[in-house]
Length: 450
Image 1 (cartoon, rainbow, N blue to C red):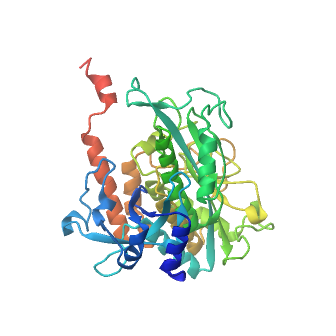
Image 2 (cartoon, helix red, strand yellow):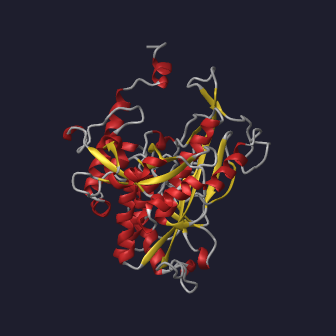
Image 3 (cartoon, rainbow, N blue to C red):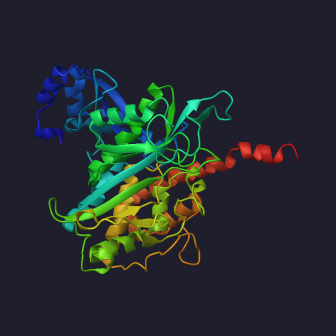
């Protein structure tokens, strides 16, 4: 936290580094970055008093509508206070004179937490792990599409470098303008702990991996990673989208989480047990079982949009059954082949439209419930995992996922009823707005013939 180093020392370092603006950023309910640029000579006051934002920023739709969530419109649109955490300062490599830092959110009326704050939600779950002497370790993997303006495309955008067959390639073959190289270098210089990247399956689709770290740090870096990739694409005159499935004729994008636990900060990986079946410890098996047991509810956080569910289906390599497997990419929860310090599970359920804090909080809460209750998973999947006779199907719509989340009392108790109520109200409003909207598909399907 910023209190460990006096503010004046931070200011001196910023000035010495020719930084005159600090952009204070924090995540909203859907993981979008909200921010304010603060001149360095005003930063001391911002740290002391906080920056005032309307709490309804958490309740604002992607189109700018304020959704009637408790604590917003009904209370006259009160403030939240955001204080810069100067320990998270990062100079922006592509924006001379500007540094990023994360903001801590509090309710100015009582100094307490705001239920919709994603970072605080994750912190609360991590406190439960600390009570058990466990430290979750997380490695995120995200895919995104890079798009270019196109006056002939129905929505105004086309995929960048439209050429099929460039899956798992690097270089100019699938990326003629070297977008990936520029982005990797900027993200490295930003200090986000990226390790590598490649062109993915579809035209204009890229994947960039982040190194593993403690859960809150991994969520922070993923949040900033998404914001940075979108900003860098804008600088190129392009759009990077983390939408689950932006095009009808191509597959979707994933957000995979690699997760393990250590015993304390510097302890061994407690998911590893060479003497146990599959080399997985009792704790690992219980954690796997917990995620499987709460997978339907977890989908509401891992796949948080109406569009998310258009990514699922047989033969998509996006999981749609609640199962697990040993080094099996058709399973929802995969156990990679590494053991020892690398023992972990890979949750393949999520898509990159997910708020990383909420996806991590939900996954960790489900795993902890399995550990607490000593749950055991079924036998692992063998073969190709799209046989519905073998396992239950995940929710196939956002409405079904929200219903599953609302009825999962154990998961909501861990995540907090205040958060759950706000999230459900916000997302159900999204469904209501969609059902009232006339889509292009409807016009094409019906207008000429009916």
